[in-house]
Image (cartoon, rainbow, N blue to C red; front, side):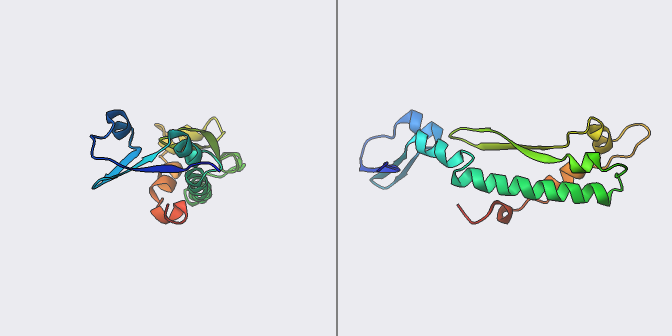
Length: 138
């Protein structure tokens, strides 16, 4: 069985490195030390944090596709249909997904040009994110 955390009684000063990394919680004389490997596992794609971020990324993709329609930027549908979320990695601090369109012209539609008004479909979708979009409370 793997140890998820270690609880120790101590009156000593916290380890400065662990405190800087945010893996030590001290309440009174009790000190809770989370092991970096366990934290990294939680942030991985199949960990609790990774699954929550994946859920929020999927919602962002759906919202961005609806926003492309809202702004009327559909001709062939390639820009809208190519919006997807890709897992790019994690460590003990975070889990990262990138939401983007594969269409080369998406940036011009999103940001606008001298002749095209901006249609910030990705920005709008990201601004709609709420804590509930990440699933249950961690």
